[in-house]
Amino acid sequence: APTTLSEVIALRNKLKRPPFVLGDTAKGMRQAAYETFGGKAKAMIYLGNVDELNFIEESHHNLIFGAGMRVDDIVQALKKRADKLAYANELAAGLSTLAQRHVRGEAGWAGNLMLTRTGFPSDLVPCLLAVDAKVSFVTDNPHHEETINIEDFKQGHVPANALLTKLTIPLKTQGLFRYYRVAQRKWLAHAFVNAAFRIDVDPNTKKVTEARVAIGVYGQGPKRSEAAEEALVGSALNTESMLKTIRGIHSDLDVEFSSEAQYKSTDNPKGKDEYRKYLPDSYVFKFFQEAQAALGIKTWSDSELGLMKPLPLKRATLKYEDRPGHESRPQLSAPGLTTGAVKYTDDMPVPSLYGYPVVTTCATGKITRIDVGHAECADGVKAVITAHDIPGVNDAGFAPGEEPLFLTEGSQIQAPGQ
Image 1: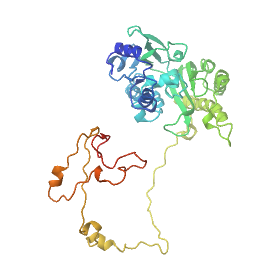
Image 2: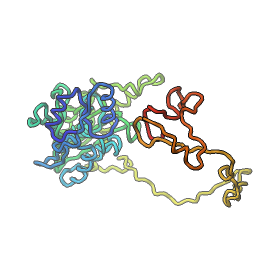
Image 3: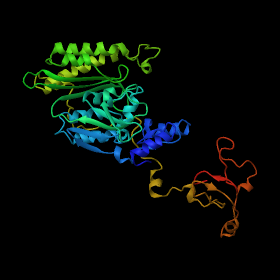
Image 4: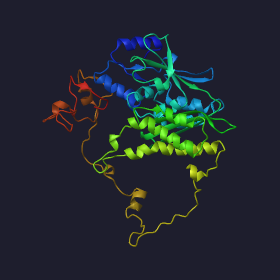
């Protein structure tokens, strides 16, 4: 495992298509291992020991993460900076929808971003698009770093050999951010469509001064809708601007809407396409509701905002009823079992011989010689049985030749306990 960025680049240039890995995720170390042993790659490059990629720092009103940081590192860092970023908790909540916590603790943000370029339905990228995040990368020179807006990090806009080094999130003291997704399950399920919204609002006029609208799992990768953002800027948060925002999203993205084949079947050939096309509309409606409530423009009840409080549990008495003929009765053998009066097979001495298996204690190796002389001379030993004493085939596996019953001289040890 390299410890410097220069070593990483040198190894990447030396090896053939080496996968970069951080943690044990399905798309991380496991897939890299499959590719390596499948002949597509010669080795994996672990980035967890590179100090230049494993850091979190603040600089010039920005929160910066090295490319070796996990998604959960970002979530925890945001939660600690609610006093420096107006929507830190909301952004952390949005990033927490990615997979499950144990996956977020292993998966790096850089790997998630790279996968998104190939069509991966990311929950991370729409959030980063909405908060004006930037990414930095190097190519062959570790000292020549370039920084671009995250929306420009796509195929054709950066070199193919780009290696991500930093993620930069601006620390803004004002603004409203929300992230929405709908999926088949709450956890470990790709979103049907996801969306992130961020606005700045003039406190006096209550009009939007800056807007970001990012939609994912809809068109060809996560994208901002410029038409929707233009509809918001300069407008009040009312029905008219909401409808303009919805129309803006569809005018920008419907032309590249991507149908999801996994939701189609013989009984439902259209799948969830129509439902998915309406999800951005519902997200915009929900965002307007929450923004109006948060900014004091309009009051909405918790039920209207979808914030139903759980009802308190009531104490109850659990009553069991036995069916006639099925009443509980003492087991007939209970007295003997509880007092020890019942005799088990092991309690009955049988005039017979018993065996004591001798097994391997190491994981690998080779049997060079088997000497049974000392064992045959031990007290109480009647005989020592080895492979030579088997009249038939020395095999104990389900498939012929799969596993020998006894190892012989010259056999390879494959596991402890043989």
